[in-house]
Amino acid sequence: MNLTSASALTACQRVLRSLVICCASLATASCAYQYGESRAIHTSAEWLTTASEELDACRDLLSSLPAADLRELDADHIRIATWNVQKKHGRDWRRDYDELAGDSDLVLMQEAPLTAAASSDFAAGRHWSFVPGHHVRGGVTGVLTLSRIEPLARCSFTAVEPWLRSPKATSITTYGLAATDRTLAVVNVHAVNFTVGVDAFHAQFRMIGEALRDHEGPIILAGDFNTWRGRRLQVVEELAGSLGLRAVVFEVDQRVRRFGYALDHIYVRDLRTLETSTTVVDTSDHNPLSVTLGMSTGLAAP
Image 1 (cartoon, rainbow, N blue to C red):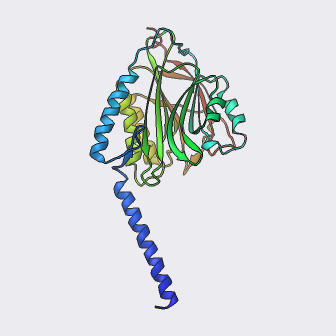
Image 2: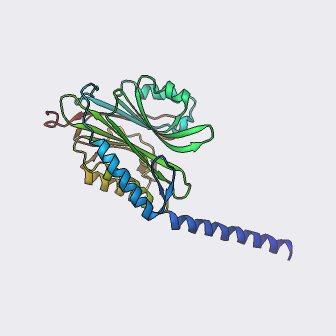
């Protein structure tokens, strides 16, 4: 065999090997998910059982009643900010964070690093609810919800990228609201990104819908949804419709877009929009979003 023939054969073998890997990824993309802290990968049947058990536990937690000694958010003025910080790659990220967080009642971060320095740094003076996602050399990143008051309950689950096998986390926290017996559910999402089709993406949002099925109070659903194609946005809109959520419209919309679709979103239920803003930054590949919300008229009374 001459050198040219050997090179051609080697190239052919590489292509075939890539095709086999690709087909294997496609075959498992819709049936392999990862939830909870166990980091176990489940088959379809195992996943259904595990997901059902976790959802039951999650719904029980989210139905917790406010404790008399816990502080409550002002139902007429709730300021929320959400930002994918891209693992703090930008040198001056703290400057942008300080401006964003400022007087926010709730700060939702995606790709937030969990380190001793970080938790005492930007989370100082706030209650923080962290759900681990991607493990990187030197630490773990995930979704982080910072709040001025202590959450009533915390619930979380993790979906795995079918191709890259990296986890994407979802955190749900609930808070008491002043002058009402209703509670606010806040969902911080870093959505599955690299997939063929939307099975894994849809499964992650279906879990959110199931977890919130029995919640009767206001809802904030926000984060990096990775909605870079129409079918993905349709999945989100279907969930929004089932829960009675509406998308917050930004008067000046500077959200990062891919293929014409915004990646980051805020959806709300039983809350009116008082003020919105988006900020262009160079410390992340996502621009932060802020919104001030108030409880819809007629719902604040006990």
